[in-house]
Image (cartoon, rainbow, N blue to C red):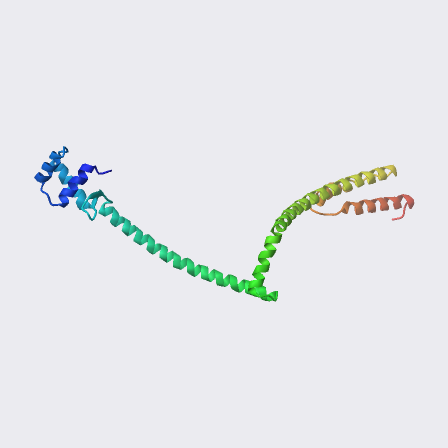
Length: 224
């Protein structure tokens, strides 16, 4: 809250050690009468530091002493904390810098280069090829996705091939007057699931053996 000019003038009179009655007389003559209670309040403001004085004795609104004290205490704590953290960070930065230097020094030694030349070369390489590196990562992502998709398509293709071959062999057996064993049909569905897990074509061998065996029975009846 701003201090009125009249209150500042009263503070100056208080500073001059004028009595309450003298202050009242002076202020009344200036057309700004004031009560003893108000003079007492202004005196407390002077004592609290809310009103300060310049070297020439003129009064001005100042920061209360209690606020200044608190500010000083806070700044002291903050400054101390900042100094402690600065020391801590400096130690950590030093350790990190030393570790990085040792690491890159060994890398430079492997290349038969000085540390300075190795770092310069690495930075130049990064500046020249960082876009290419980003593009390479994007291509890797696309490749992984394509491989996954290809794997799915491959399984589906194998299932279709198995189905077409199964149908072809069934038609071939029926055309030759041979019956289709029920177990072969059961195995066909089992093999579909087997293909989903990355298997090959186990049913083909079964079909070939069945066809071969029954054909032998027909060509050589009575032969076990």
